[in-house]
Length: 271
Ligand SMILES: [Zn+2]
Figure 1 (tube, helix red, strand yellow):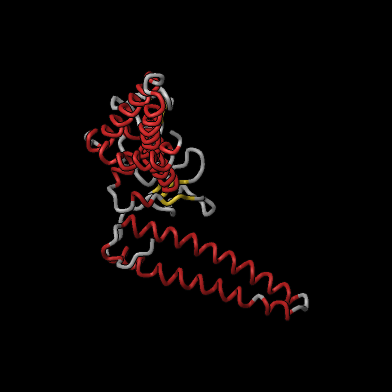
Figure 2 (figure 1 turned 60 degrees about the vertical axis):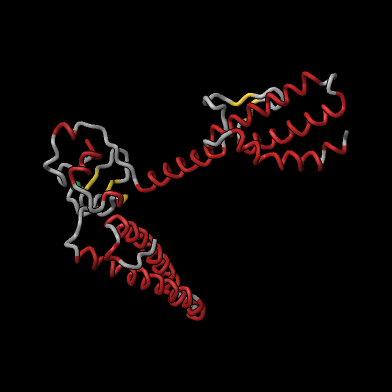
């Protein structure tokens, strides 16, 4: 997320943005070198006129690089201004270690890292605590032995984002779901097991309106069915009330106009 005022941003926010810009920067660099190589080849092969056609794209890549650098500058300056802060990187391979710097001498120029921006500015003991046996002994020489023997609980920002997304999805699903007041599935006679609040409300409206139709047609003949619809409506209302911590009277009053509308629109014409 773009940062308007670095002085009020947290180290994690600044590093997250720097990480994003680093990736963008690297991409633009790749594009630029690919394009300039291609242009040079065309010039060498006597097709300079085609090389000129690549100029706008080359210019665009240069512009993107310049923009990344301009956006990075105040963020780097803020890091310096605060006298720096802790940072942590995870090596991206199976059993990869956590390092306090990508310049760690146990790593190579080709080593691929995930920047653990969630730990930026955090206490190193906390990072080591989370990293357990994944903590680099070179970077964190003072990590206690018992901590070093623990399995790593480190996650990359991508993993954390995915987990948050999943949790968000589960929350949204729970918000739509409905159960009986005691948490067991909401089972009805006429509508089977009802999973969602949407279906619960629709079924309630339908049950009362249809029961009214049956009553109008032949109350004696349909006595048992009518009772079942009324019982279903009662169960659904109790479930809705429990879910929203409202009274059944309150919900009945809320749904009454909808039952009436259903009756007028549909069932009253059938009788
Ligand atoms: Zn290290």
